[in-house]
Image 1 (cartoon, rainbow, N blue to C red):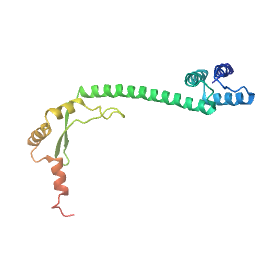
Image 2: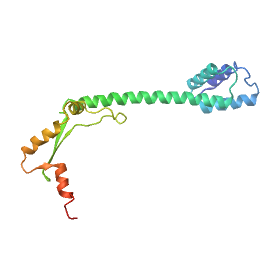
Image 3: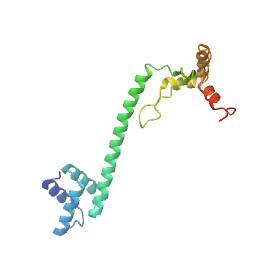
Image 4: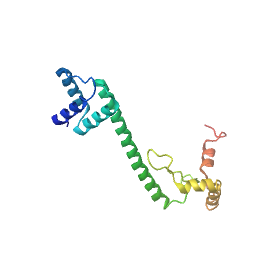
Length: 179
């Protein structure tokens, strides 16, 4: 909480600006504005420092609000960057952990429908970083685009009577089926 000493120091420093009011009612209004804008002495010192660096003349209570808004926006942006960096580090840790066991592809079977599907791993990590994905799946896709088709053919050969997921749905809901 902003203290009386913090308010007095802030007023004293602001009084160095040209045309700073000396009217007691104006000073009360400035104190009220500082109390509204600054939750702590540190916030008031920061605000007064910014005002002193930006203006040679008294900027008015509206000017104080604008400068405080700029300070809060910068602090918020810095906090978001910090959080983003933390989330990115965590997403990279999760990806590394995943990749230690991932083949870069997955064989998906459904014994009820007797289907097989082979897909490259597209797993994404981190809420804000959709660009962080399984590196093994990405590398396999770029090195051998037909890998999944060959692997799927091998799986179907090992399971006579089974079909691909696409073939299953095509048979089930194909154009020649009566609705």
